[in-house]
Length: 106
Image (cartoon, rainbow, N blue to C red; front, side):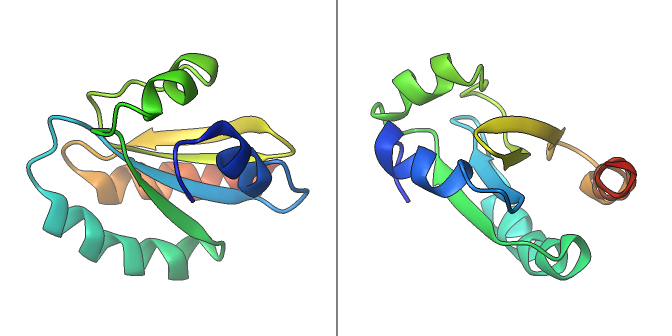
């Protein structure tokens, strides 16, 4: 998957929930985030795709979907809509628990 809108939208415009991990331009703890990813996939029970927002090709995508390119965040999409999301700056475990709870309510 890339930041090109057609590639991105093919992935998120499905009836299944799809999580996308956006790595912000200012992210320093990439290793921590990637190790959290394995845990997240088990916890959330869905595909997680990773996009690095440093790439300028992401500017159109970030504008269209209102994604902050500076911050690292995990967003969940379904049928082209953003259904939920969390910031992965700081204590992500607490955030993941909140995300999981919010997804279970839907």
